[in-house]
Length: 189
Image (cartoon, rainbow, N blue to C red; front, top):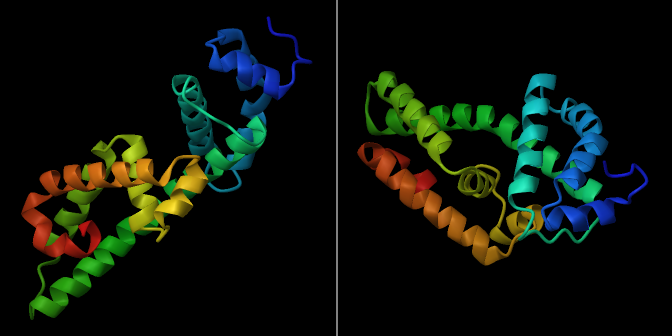
């Protein structure tokens, strides 16, 4: 068992080399506080799911990660960003439905609101099918209005990686939503 007195920096170094005990120690050290922090933004159940996702992401991406600040700072920021993304998904759905209704209202005298609802469901499903990294970058750009540089800084990536992820998300969304492209042009362009 990894001793409790190991610093976060030491544990992170061992984690990068695949040491499972160090990962367990990081998990045990941060999990309760991260859940409590996330519960300030979303429900406790959602916060627990988010923290578990962040920890899983930490383990799966340990070899290529470069955390420049303190590990705790990085984890709290990751949890906060994912909580905000979850909050924004509800706002996104409302915004898409509202925008589509307005667009339909302008194009037709009597809009077919069933089409709008159908489109919103298809868009939500298409977004859910994206790999999490693509979806996160896409939503931060298109729905939160963040620039590639802001996203890169938030996620600890290069702007080119952010650009790649958004372009891949757009390609996949265009295929999945090809029947709705005329209506969605403002979101996917």
